Length: 168
Image (cartoon, rainbow, N blue to C red; front, side):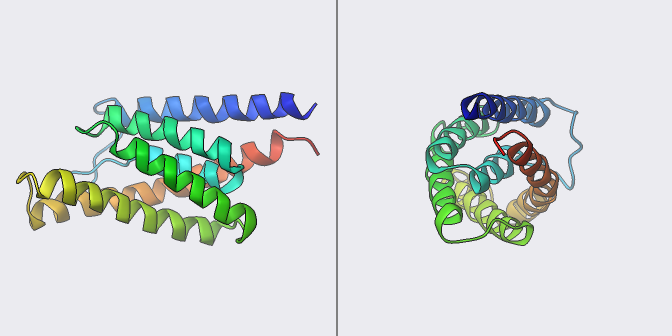
């Protein structure tokens, strides 16, 4: 009986990732705020990782990272590798050592988003000579805030899916 609920929960997460990818990558569908669009895959896979075991979190991090690389990044592999590792570690931490709460999820998602996207900017934009500090401020700060605001909705959606699609 547990496998049936697990299958439906994983199918719902997969459908969510596909819908968010379409929403994120379709031009003009999401409004840009000060030149930045949200990176919806990061909070989606992190909120899944907060609630699931390590192996499913790893695979959803892999899928979300691959979708983010396809739709956003010029360099295939950065977000795939990073989100796979981060989701595994976050799931391990929240399964064994921390309590899943909204404030913990908000804090972790904020820090991970800022560090992950800043490292992307540093390695693939700034060192390539395609951006400076004003480019970072004008395009990336709004992207951080927009992504973190979208995390609030995704946290409650994934919490609802996790609680309602499992054995009691």
